[in-house]
Every structure is written in structure tokens, then in C-alpha cells.
Image (cartoon, rainbow, N blue to C red; front, side, top):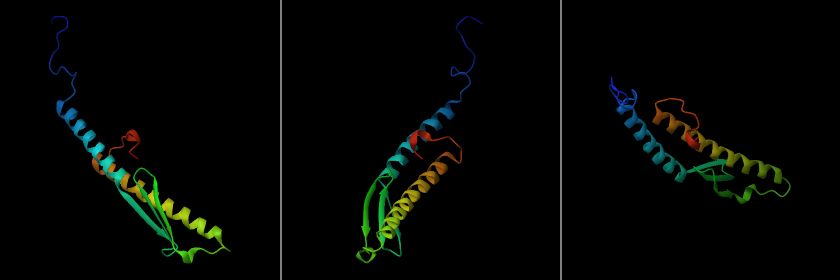
Length: 117
């Protein structure tokens, strides 16, 4: 065989279908990431006394406090409810992101995937 020539696939055995599938997965993941970043997640605690809304970028969009929850004698409880509501909304966003990535990758563990999770 002459120098510089090759046999078979010039990609060194990489199947072109695999490359196409990887490109499609990358496009799907970018679309999914954009959708998740724009989605809002809402959590309420204390029987509806505190509500927190976050987006998929983990930004707190709003916190609503029922006036009945405001007790000057027990500010710590209100603070705890705010933290709990924000944490629950963040947990919801994370859980959905993980589930969506798992669906897209067919359960393959591909690491952090550039910050999607």
C-alpha cells in the first residue's frame, strides 16, 4: 500500500451514524437546556404561607409571604419557611433537569454535560 493511503473509513473506524447521532443529541440538549432555563418552578411551604418561584437558571424570581405568617415574635420561623420554599423549588428544577437529561441520553452517564445538571 502506498504511503499516505488508507483502507476503509477515513475517520479511523468511527461510524458516521454515530457522529450524526451525537450531533443530534447535542442539538437536542441545547434546545432542552434553553427550555429548562426559561421554565419556572414553584414551591409552597407552611400550608401555603410562603411561596417561592425559581427558574431553571437557579434564579429566585419571587417570594410571596402570606401576611398571617408574619409574627414579630417568631421571625425565625418565617425565615426558615422562606429558605425551605426556595430550596424545594431549586430541588424541583434540579430533579427535572436530571430526568430530562437521562431521557435524552437513554440513561448513559455522560458527566456534567457542560453544566446542564
